[in-house]
Figure 1: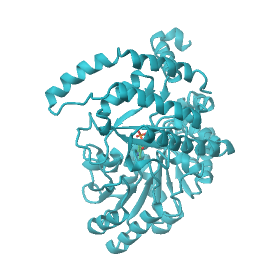
Figure 2: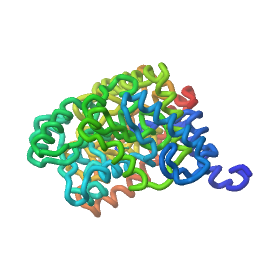
Figure 3: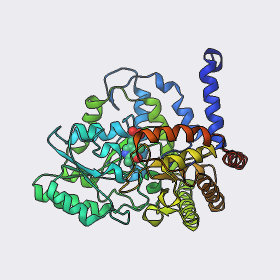
Figure 4: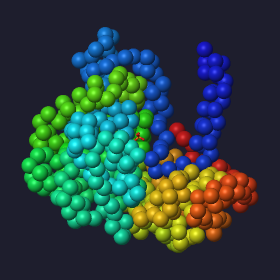
Length: 445
Ligand SMILES: *Cc1c(COP(=O)(O)O)cnc(C)c1O
């Protein structure tokens, strides 16, 4: 029986979401539109199978075909990234990072060093509210005054703290990451500590850019690479853990340790439909068009950044080298939560975000984060970015002066009133109409 017949409620909600995704500018930098081919694999009969274990070493019968699917995904990832080993089973990015720590660290004893969440690191890089900060010792590094990674400072901290693992990678860093420098730091600290210091590159946000050749690859310099598959890579939700030649030279058992940590250490049966969809996304990413796609993501982000600077927006680090832009709205007298909601009302979907040294609480941060992967998938180019920047400026101008009060009680009272008011703002609703009309020219294929 069809979905529409058996469950009209869910059917209708999916339809509504499909329309929403078509009618707005999706500019959350971690989001994308997958291809129809990826979704076909994701919605296939492979979701019915159990296949605990790895190709040709399964705990259940009937896995000959699944073995071929998983092997194909592995071969494609190894070829695309140029690595000797990959595990394609992690359910998503956060479990994948947990699995890496589980493979290499002793809980409550060994230390993780990662970029502070307040400066653009991910929750799983050692934040106190995540398993990474609860079950392991942690030390964080921060960005400098210019909003850039400070490699001398990172080396100094690493020398003093001797972490067992250093994580490089971020969720809100608009510049190129120097993996070579991180590699030198990890190697030096390993020698100092007298045991390996592992370097993990978490390339979740930039994997597609690396494949397209518009961000340097970490492969020669790091030991382990984790990436989600659903961001710039345009695949299904999921993740992969790769081990490099350098990692295997440092620790010949590294890939075995990762495999054991994924299964049986952390997960049960792999999601075989997800594995197949990852294989499809990797095939798509190996095509020449994908290089152009990656190049266009960056060109679009740079154009958007230039235009926003012209309107007087304060961009962290002054601009971007990749797919994302982080804006401090303080000089516009607009709070990040206010800006994000006003933009949503106008059909531009981004997220509020903390900026370096933010004085505001996480729910009302000072900035917003936006990116170009999804709108580039729709075929938008530089000329469209000029238009989008003008809309963003118009929206932020509309809510000028809407600052969030200092005290907690005043904040919730302010928010209630603002939320109701902004949803009826005629100027914003007019922009939403223009955005919808504009988006109709860029079908999601
Ligand atoms: C998105 C992301 C993750 C986590 O991925 P989920 O699939 O949301 O669990 C981990 N690290 C970085 C850097 C990310 O951007």
